[in-house]
Length: 230
Ligand SMILES: [Ca+2]
Ligand SMILES: [Ca+2]
Ligand SMILES: [Ca+2]
Ligand SMILES: [Ca+2]
Image 1 (cartoon, rainbow, N blue to C red):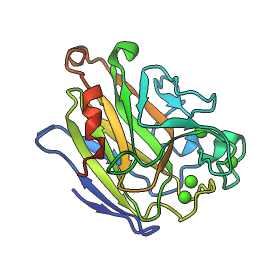
Image 2: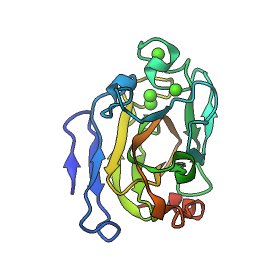
Image 3: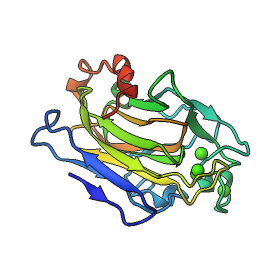
């Protein structure tokens, strides 16, 4: 499946890994409008009965229940920080006074961040997962990939020309990337072929009990796949 955006010169190619989840419906989400606050999420984060969890890094920690992060670090307020706009208390076109999660160039293959969802801590796996890309390199190819309960890929989205060419906290470029899979999502990755990536607002919910997943999750070793280009 492929999808082209008409806005902002962003081209999105969505590739579903049919061998991983044959016959199972996976939906990738990329609303091509700026994500400036949690209100811009396509998920019902705070509605009655919602079980969504949101990590915005504003306490300086990655400590949301059942969320593990690899490949990056929390970035504190600075003239180069690209938090989601509203996190600093004001939607003003800048995220420099907030916190985010950033990863610089890796040993090879560019920056990569991976987030895993711990079924023991959650008692389940999320069926809906999203993250907000807030900064990168203007020339980079950016890839979002999701993984099912057995660790196999559910597919990828590829993005070209996401960035505005600036790294000073501008927020008009900020975009939500997400996935819905009824079988449960064990991890997501965001990676690029050069530069660095800044991310924020990891959100996950619509929990599905996944008793069979506990013995199948052995995901730490899979992080080595982060530098592989799809
Ligand atoms: Ca702001
Ligand atoms: Ca933030
Ligand atoms: Ca930004
Ligand atoms: Ca930028």
